[in-house]
Amino acid sequence: MRKTFCICALMFLMSGMLSSCGASGAAKITDEFTSILNKPASEQNIESAESFLKANLTRLNDEQAGELLLLWEEYALNYDNTGVDYTRLIAEYEGEIPDYLTEMFGYKAFEQNDPIIFDATLQVDSVELVSRTLELEDFIVAHRDDQLIQNDALWLYKRYVNAVLMGASNSPVFDYETREFSPQLLDVYDTVISERPDSALAAVLAEYEDYLAELGYILEYDRKEESAKFFETCDRLVSEAELRIYGAEQTH
Image (cartoon, rainbow, N blue to C red; front, top):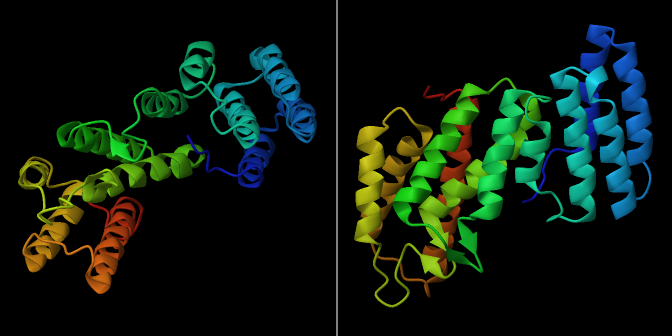
């Protein structure tokens, strides 16, 4: 899974936390830890950095440990974007890092082990897809103020919303032959709108259904303007879902 939280932003947050706590011991650990991360990434250096972190966990509180673990995650993923086993991180660090970070690793582990899309093909049915999307949305809403997980959670959420709206290249919402929108998917949309009207997902699906009705539930892929408008609409609705969670149009 792609890691989206940059080291410079994380270090800014970390410095603020340490200064506010006056945690000179933690600051010293952080300096030593980042000196390891400043070395070119390699399997040996990734292992050395994690070994250093584990050796110093008892000298850190859970927030400090979580901050450093995220720095390590970034470092490891920049070397190999498949090189972090989130199931292992949960097993080894649960109780040592904030609960919300452990839960975020759980969502990453789930997606890592059971991805919604593989080889451009949806791997889950529409009911499972919207269930995952709503669950993740609820998690994000509950942790709006936890900036350490914000970027990663939103990246995964927008990936899910995009799949709800568009499907995947080999699993499109509009049939490639008939050009018709999936009636089964419309039923799933209606269920979300009726059962979770408070959600950002329900709001964008209601707007999406209006757009689909205008199309007559048929998309002519070979018409460039019509096809471009479809992708533009989906991109806009994905962004709108994010705004409804964090912006002025919050629904919770």
